[in-house]
Length: 180
Image 1 (cartoon, rainbow, N blue to C red):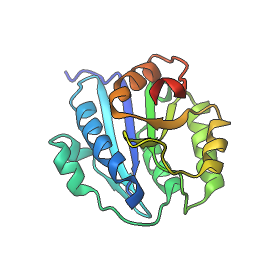
Image 2: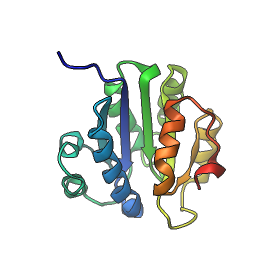
Image 3: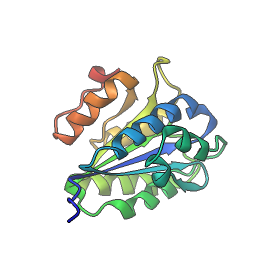
Image 4: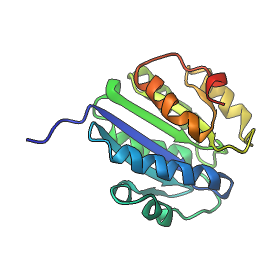
């Protein structure tokens, strides 16, 4: 019999041109998570359209990168809505949104969906960048609104990511200073 997955991890990454560095690290992260038997991993990329790269993650990060089409425009809300279908057990789900939060879609709906995720028990993280490049450019207004929902919203360096994910899965308080 197939062993039940303990956690669902959903990586939802913004493929707008400004996120190029983050996409490389997120693709590698998605492939690593997909190789862990206890995790049911989904990797999604978005701009104004949503592309499910989950199958590509079963193979190689390069396959994921070839699935990414860096472009303009962003509809974060549309992608978060798409990802909601993967959440069967909210209390055992981790949703990682990697985006600079420049929303071209419906901001109020995005905030409502993220709040509903959190209220239902989903562990939600918003990474404004997954990069070593210092302070990212991002929409500070939306970031503040997301933080006000008790959703951690900050940039993270790739070498701190495993520690961040472990802390999130264990339900620990996430302090953004610890992951910069």
